[in-house]
Image 1 (cartoon, rainbow, N blue to C red):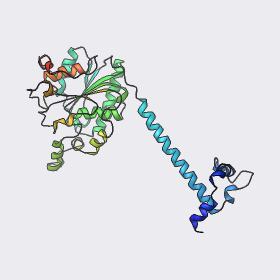
Image 2 (cartoon, one colour; image 1 turned 30 degrees about the vertical axis):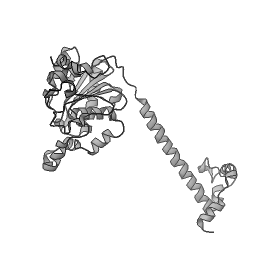
Image 3 (cartoon, rainbow, N blue to C red; image 1 turned 120 degrees about the vertical axis):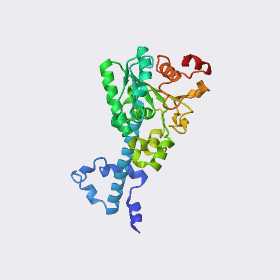
Image 4 (tube, rainbow, N blue to C red; image 1 turned 180 degrees about the vertical axis):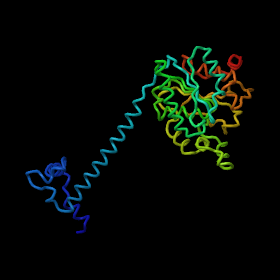
Length: 307
């Protein structure tokens, strides 16, 4: 009989498997050549040795697979959402090119409301690797919480800053530190403007620009699975008159409270650059990072929020 036939014929049948397993001391292979009851493994035929080694490999592989699955399940269950009724400091994350001046009006309004506000500086002038910017955000949050003694922060990310905030939540500890994440006109699914830049002037499109191209590796990875992972409450505020994030609904996030400015104020002409300065948007942000749970405004709120 051929090689496979020998392997089958010399392998133990199902009813004798347990006794054969014990006899070969499979539970402790390192002792096969040292036990006093004989060199059992050495005495096996080559075909049976191959079968035993194959079995060990399959068993080890299965054990490794189960370990990985258990670890992943444990990690996903490790997130302990922070208390939603205790607002902490507010962290503002600037957008592409890292201009903090664009967030000053929002910062002033939040401070006037009694909130501790920090506008973080983006690494690499806001054009460098978004993952590195997210890591830098994590260090900034650690320092803020150490300074204030609070347990959590509310993060508002403008434009690409919203992507940075999401990366921080997913990869750099933000899921245990963020109470709310509010994004303003963020290209969560990329923007065709970045794609156009890559095609027309690639030398003028640095790392962050390339990462914001629709279907870039970063965009696909960030949106794979749950776009709003366990931890904070997510809110995305965007405008249909955005000409930087195109299409504008790239800012919508599955699992988030999505607020389109024009659903609130149909006649509003709010551009991408005006999002963090428009009175209605500032009022929306302040409401979403308040004590109450995030809630969609009604169309009757436009006048009160804009005043």
